[in-house]
Image (cartoon, rainbow, N blue to C red; front, side, top):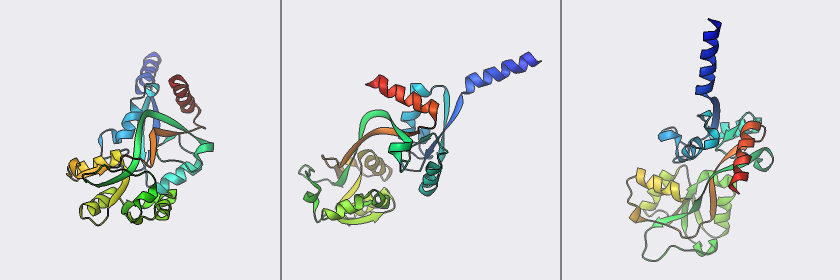
Length: 224
């Protein structure tokens, strides 16, 4: 009987795999419990060959709660960025494909280009209230833009369609997703050719989570 139970235990350990909880906030389409596989970013993560022996689960919490968990150090992987990321965390690049952060406007005949932000002086722009903590709101205002803070991108695009703002500040993937959810034809929207920022798809790794940290670093070294 002991042999039987030992075999069952070994089989379960082998086939179930180790559990790995990933911290996230609801931020569609990247991380959201209402989307298949918990969002586009989670899809990039769960299909990593390095994590084939792990059962990945999502831990969705509000931003304030996520900040407290990150500060406590009681986490392993997080799509929500830690404040002291340079010291305590490692950025694991999941895909070199860039996420472009720029502006959406209603489609016009001429190309949507800008070379410095001051070229957009006088424009009304809707942007997420959360960007104020990153200094982006102040950056827009310094360059002469009229900023209208919104709670979510759905609100921003509704304002754009009503011509209450000239632009919506968002990344290209999120903008296209929101437009699709609101049944907005993409031909009506124009994303700026210039990006304020480009970043690869990534997740943050707690360096204290030694096993995962080593997996992430070995993958980065192999990719170079």
